[in-house]
Amino acid sequence: QVQLVESGGGLVQAGGSLRLSCAASGDIFNLYNMGWFRQAPDKQRQFVAAVTNDGDTNYANSLKGRFTISRDNAKSTVYLQMKSLKPEDTAVYFCNAVDVRNGARGYWGQGTQVTVSS
Image 1 (cartoon, one colour):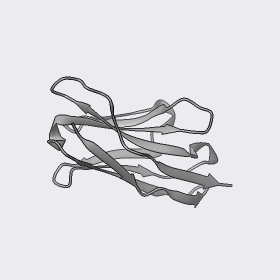
Image 2 (cartoon, rainbow, N blue to C red):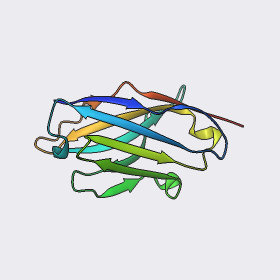
Image 3 (cartoon, helix red, strand yellow):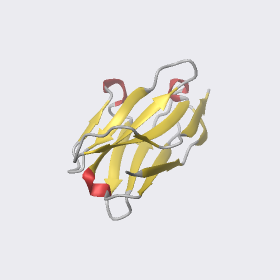
Image 4 (spheres, rainbow, N blue to C red):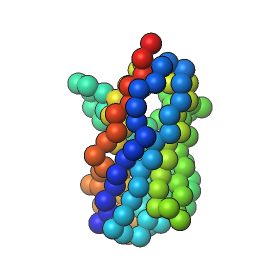
């Protein structure tokens, strides 16, 4: 069982950058694979990036080169660095956790809004 709180969203112009943070609590952070998803209005929740408890990363193919995921186990925090933002990146961004002990995947944060203007 883990609780997740996202922060760092906001309004930026196209071409700008943002760094999102997800702070975890309530369990052993290094036993969770962490990920970022996003959901635009009237769209399905979409995979963005993930990092395993060992530090291996993977990304949605369309976002490679613009987004970078990282984790700081000492701070129990996962980050999403976003650059060269586009209006199409506008969405609520959610943090996700998967328990490597049993594969439980139902842990989500409340989301943080990212709005990219043109």
